[in-house]
Length: 266
Image 1 (spheres, rainbow, N blue to C red):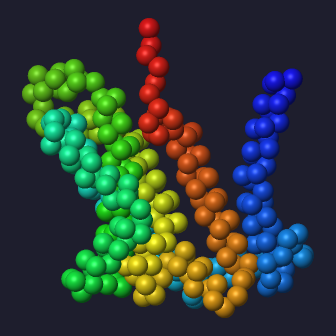
Image 2: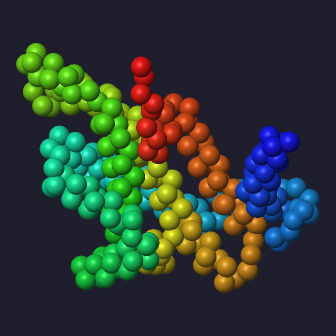
């Protein structure tokens, strides 16, 4: 009986979580230009409109560009920082790690306000470059944590053996360290990209209406009414996140990437 109750509870939780997604997916295939559920007819024209209408297509392009470049920049900052923390240790390393994750730990509105004041003061408010850099700084914590977890898996004797054989630091990193942490670097990158695609507050505070992303476009469109295109965007976001994290889980150790420690083997 206890097992049956447990399964019933888990099933109820799953239904509670999936039901809103099911409703949004149904709304996105409505034939009329209204938010109806159950859908009135079936049509994929709203998904097509997302790529055809200039306003939505431009917002989609901006979102992809910002997310990809911000993810790359976040990894470019996090990788050497994680290597320094791993190799040196000590109080300075802990302070740098805390500094690296601090923007992500703060409420997004606080970070967004700081970015807003900074970019206004340097005259780059509303520039897409400002949004890319702001997202990269805010999301550096994700690749930093992922890469740091990967570096913990690198065995020190491998490094010592490579140096004993005459390899310099660059060679050790290229041939020993990086191949071992590559999955963590990729995972940190995709985590940053997915969150950048969905981020609204910082993008709105830094770019405003000049570099409109999809989340900003959705909120701006709410002033003129509700259309199924919004639901189509939401479905694409959910599918993108599911595919990306599913690939990470299939190709790597997802629990480990989220901080779970492997049990010690006897």
